[in-house]
Length: 614
Ligand SMILES: [Zn+2]
Image 1: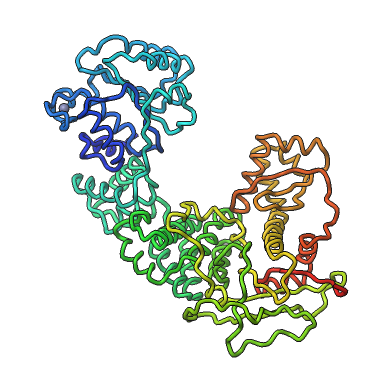
Image 2: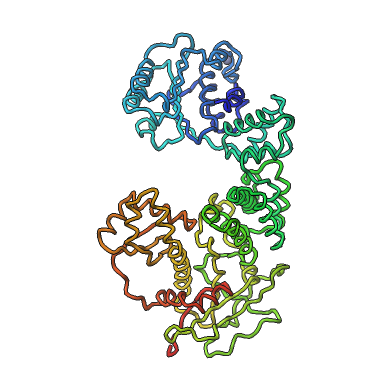
């Protein structure tokens, strides 16, 4: 493939030239200097991160003629040159993916017993070694059990879990990591300069971002760009080649979010949509920047944020205006859009909704399982709770939250709402306690130790995809179990989503397994227990079949993708008797139109339900 020639050409000839993987380089260098080279190495990691380049370097280092071991591989001695040119008969490079013929691989491996013809050490490099046939693996294993002194094996793989444990245990193992955006960009700039390619500002970073850690991909993109561009390679070319949206739109949206400017945010979205850009890519680009910002804020470590040189200053300026709870909220919102944007018939509507939601819904500052005292309403326009026998009012002695300057936007003092119309629930009264933006803002920072930010924040909390109701407030009369109420609300919110998406889920399953789809026709979601969806099956037959591991996995995968989180399923064939506990009542209450309306308007949770005679 032509696209690989720059990669080949720029393959590092010495350890110093190698980009990234410093931990591997250091260990191998020490081994060379101390003459403690192992007989077998296993290089694991994603594609394009330098495993085979490293194998070449090691092949040279163990054969290099430079007198000082610290200088090996020198890249210039006859041994180094013959290996670099692929002429060295003692350096055998196999790609197991294309060389799985039992005879070939096994024969090659068995020839290891012959001494090297020209060099000091015979080196066997087996790329994608997990693809070796069983016979070849056995030959390899036999060799590794009693390796001849004159040979070393370097195995490389992207799928280490497919390598037999017997082989693993005989290898010294190195894990190769993805290249960061900054280091990829630096390397691209170096290559471009040497190749006399002129790059517009920001181009190396844009390519680096798109190649997600693979130097081979990054150089391939650069080469393609060079082949159809005359003169300076601009960002426009990069974007059109890669279907990326211009960073300017992403920046504009982030600025608008930070300024809480709904109008600007919506304008940014519509600008992107008008260009006919790939909206999913736009959302991904957005999430990528928000994530970098979050990592920077949470850790204070620029390196962790991994942005290109073109964005370092920008990120710093954002960081001064951003806060962790809002970022968390936004990342959850926008990272959940991918699927919706793919399936929606409404164009960019999901993005618009997410933007509105990002700006009207306060960030949730803590998991709903820990209800917190409501901020005592102090704003002048706070109206007293309606005079009802059992109003849900905040405790008068509630500890005041730490004073914090009110945000300059969206003043919405706490409100206490009791639906004024008797809901048609059998003599039940729903006390929904609500609080608004400033209460959430006044809440303490969530417990986020810098190192506890999961890299995969976006996928963590599915409930956030559908506007999570703000933190539960505690009414004057403590509900029987606020934790239970909060958990029930969270569960049922998920259940409602899944009920809503059930037909779509079944449709999604079909192309993968019509059988599982058929099974799902006899099953319906009835409950949610945290991250487990409870499915009611119409018979033991359906339950058993659905619980077969492959079938279950498929359903779990589709549900998780649909809801934007990680969910398991559990099947039951017993219809649970209508629950009379709080959980059951909350489930019923949520089905009521008025209650739903109240919950939507005030972003409320149901905390308790009282009957009139109560
Ligand atoms: Zn050399």
